[in-house]
Image (cartoon, rainbow, N blue to C red; front, side):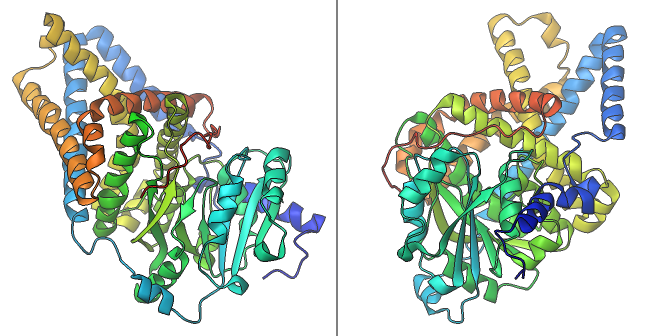
Length: 485
């Protein structure tokens, strides 16, 4: 622990500098403060120039080759997802710590919870209540509510919720000085300077964590190898029945946290962490540079850095409830930020491709690319190929027919039919295994959800070029008050 008064101007200045510039100064290539290095930008522009020139002078073969390459990408992503899903279905893919084992844990280590919040006065009261229900010794629990200094409504709501009272003495409001970039990872880095726990976790403002989650994580760390430095809890939503969008979102999370994330863990590939309920060994996360304040999916970036340093992540069967976005515009804002951050993280970690390949292996490197770059790019390409398919069904123009010779047509047909059917099937299996029969209609109508994903991905790719580190705020407090698992 620091011997400097954390409320002193000197400490605040030092902590803010470390929060904003720490990773960029210690390892400039690991920071997304510059979205494209000169060689990355020039390589991309050169490739685009070649494609445009070839399209102008050799339109038919060029477009056919592009369609073939896109089809190959579709097939690679599809095959990899199915394999990961299969591995995630194994009973031991998610670690389970029973209530009895969690409550039996003794000699509990000091624990710090970081809760960054900005513009969240509507949900702070529920947040404080949820944090107060966490079952962990109060003398070993430090909760830092990280609020921006100029966010008066949220600050007032926090104190109105009882922070500062003796019963909630373990919850402390930490005011983060204003500084660009105004991002969640910057606030987490600032709070990390004041953290006293051996284990650090993050909760979002709308989260309702399992009250025994911290105890389960402690028990898990004691049973897992020392190389495991992060335990990711599962995320679900408390308002799945509010509308069709929240049902789609719940279906999406059920597949991701129930099967794909555990499958990635079993494959020893880098894991794009969730933005909340990931529990870290503080000394390790500090040593590897903590969070990148310029990366808008700091969780995915940190997951790759953990793997690249030879460490591992485990997934635990403990659920944190969140609020599913019920508003389409708000949902697209959130999802476009995620897609942009995936590409940011891929660009950052491919700056030293040989080193990353040596650290995570050939399969890990390919899977890292398919997930972080493939996910948003495929979502963008969907708009193009859906338009091509619709045009062919409506009029069968010869210009489209010549782009699909047999060697391209049949793989593309496999990607279209088997790929889409496999995705729907995986969602159905996940809902069945999670006992969510109420999501059947959402599974069957999920292609409409994919359309929204494509719009969000296109927006995220555009923002990566125009405003890479801009954190598009997701508004909370729009959900219903139902609390469903």
